[in-house]
Length: 69
Length: 386
Image (cartoon, rainbow over all chains, first blue to last red; front, side, top):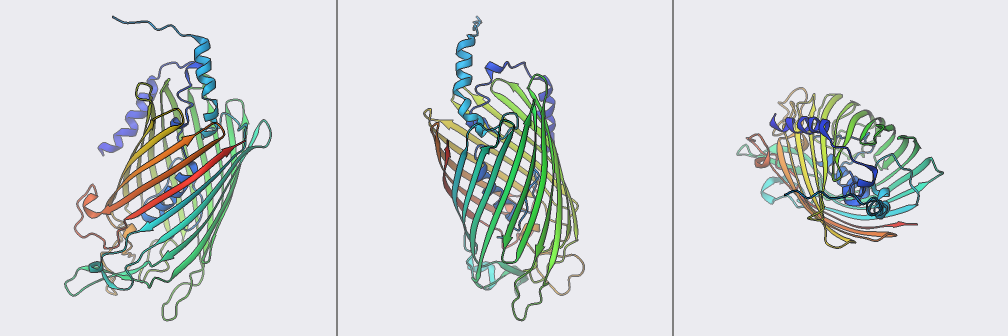
């Protein structure tokens, strides 16, 4: 249950963000700051994890296919 | 004593402009692609052989997969972007047919011969329409194997707040799958089954400061139809599954270290009784302006499904499965990536090691499933922009 608190804490923290001007967002636009830095590799990793573990899903709409390794 | 640092607008704008090539990496929907990008990855997936002392019958050899993946991202006009993904993979090896108790009552694997030889083709296309402070994307996909065909479609939308610091997003997707198991003389398998999946999510992304952004969201899914494994000896599962999850992600850049810390957490729960926790850290360390190293660590733990059984038996009744994916276990992934990036191209390589074990689970496991998987995943690739 303690781990469940983590997203709640993060979301509460989001309520207290500081103003960031457009010219201050260079670091946020860096390639190593992307939510998914390598979509092609992530797709393979997700495909393997979905086929090897009993849970799946995330902040996407998923795809289709068996993945029955 | 505190120093007050004056902001130099010209220097700041230059910094932002230097970061522009990176915009294509943002999976965000606020900017249409301005260049075409082609990507290719070759991945090799190799499972460890099963220990001989865990097998009752069959081959210790497990799955091996070679995967070729392609991606095209290109602008169609100022407001439309197209993404096309394709992959082709070959799979070979042996799979678990069942679990039986030996004379001492210990669960042992019954493996198929190393005769599996399958191919999978996966294609999807997405068109995203960009408008003021938001976007909408439509996607269609197809996946085909010798014994499996799936069609899927989805719609996703994003909207930014007026100050562009908060992004609201959501999406819904549907997949329709048909299974036609290959038949083996002497084994009774279904000839044709189908299933469907409806998945949806909502998320909120918040820029916290000039080097930190957070994302939190909820996701759910409803799966319906034939959800068992047709290639297992006795695998009888409910024909419906409802899942729910919470996800939180953080991206934090530390200029003094020239490094970005990625933290991802997911909580998952379904009405089959499985709960899981996934926590992942990736450290993107820039060594030069072009080169960076990316070590990662991922921890996963799940509880067992309500109908999980240690071994198959004709004495079991009702829903039952000895599939290791329904068993309680934990797993750790260690990985290392290397990225070399120029304005026009990018070279990448990754290696990962996945080890699973009953002892790694958050809760104690009385009887570990003998089929738990350990594997290596390696990939190399290139992206080219023009």
